[in-house]
Length: 245
Image (cartoon, rainbow, N blue to C red; front, side):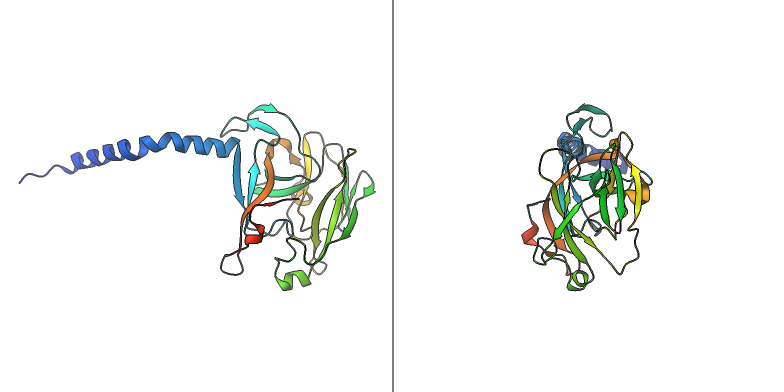
């Protein structure tokens, strides 16, 4: 009984894969990856730099059409309709090493920004702070030891318009060595000043400098899923599909 040469079998197998798997899936794969590149995406958050707003183990939704439209797989913009505002949570690339980050826009081009003992000053004016209760979203999901070592507040971030301030949660870690005083510095044109809501445990513009506008790829708007990394990936169902402030 004759057998087919290995080369013939290999070509037959490759032809089968191309006809039945690769070719039918190529277009859907291209469309999905293009949409993830230019329209919307999700981002897993492994660190606590945005606690208590975003927790370790959160998966956040990124609206890549929030500010502009880009050519898929490139940084080329086809259109621009808005700019990041103070208080926006954005996904960006660190200008020093390209790490993908989730941070909050604390200051926009032209702002004079300063930190004094973790109090944010914008254009010479301190931002307002109010108490954040222990049962607030995000705070209640932290480990008891982490809650005990932190101080929490609501930061009332002025927007520079006639609208109400953007109110969001922040935390500080008094016992941790941290860069609590910074500036004053003026944000140059085409750049932004980023901060993490976990002020004493965040690698942000205090360390890597101003964020170029071109490195901001979208706005984080919602938590779509969440798992507690400290407890066997136990789902945090209360955080599923919750809005980000």
